[in-house]
Amino acid sequence: MSPDRLHKSAWGVAVPLLLLAGCGPKVLAFDVQPRRVCAGDSVHITWNVRGTPRLVAVRRTEDSVDIIRYTIIAESHGKQAFSQMDVITFTPGVPAALAFSTDMLGHDSLVARDTLRAATWHDLLRVGDITSDSGRQVLVRHAGIDGVVGPGRDGNAAWRGKLMSGPWEVRSGLKPGEVPGNPTHHPPSHLFLKVGLVCDGRGAEP
Image (cartoon, rainbow, N blue to C red; front, side):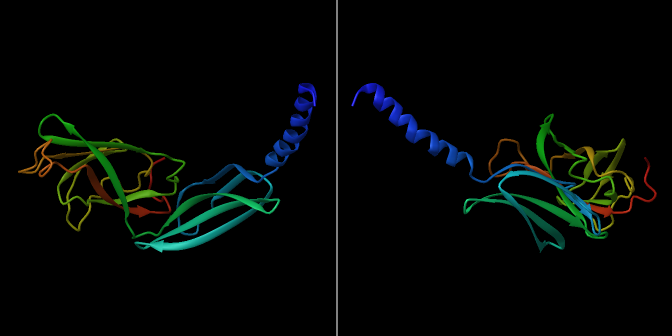
């Protein structure tokens, strides 16, 4: 057989294999918004798949918070492809836990900054009382308001009715014995807040 005939034969085998591979199921896009909601709210789900789509929702409860895992499944030629996304449902009176990664601020303080995205934290989710969950007093900056938050049971209501989304900053002085760079007495890598949620937005500023 000539080299030319061998070349044609190889192409004759390869093309059908490529076509079959391209027909397999695939999830091209999958999105659920918002990702944090109040009890009774609706979510908007979009997808783009290659194959026959099937949506599955499974609810579970962790730490008094309901979590619904949405799974989009694409089926074709006896095979499946899938993608998953979780939506957390909050109930008024059950606080949300926020964790902020810390950096050193000067030689004697910690600072932690993060921005909560509106796509994740729906506008209906508003701030109630805030308490420190780090066993220390912290300074919180959010929505243009500065306030001191302690670890006690009584929270600070200075941000009541404000949006959960947006920039947050948390600061704290070092405790006695905390030494940057000391593996045994290193300052905490995170500062934690517990934020009570108001789900109807009443009394909130626009």
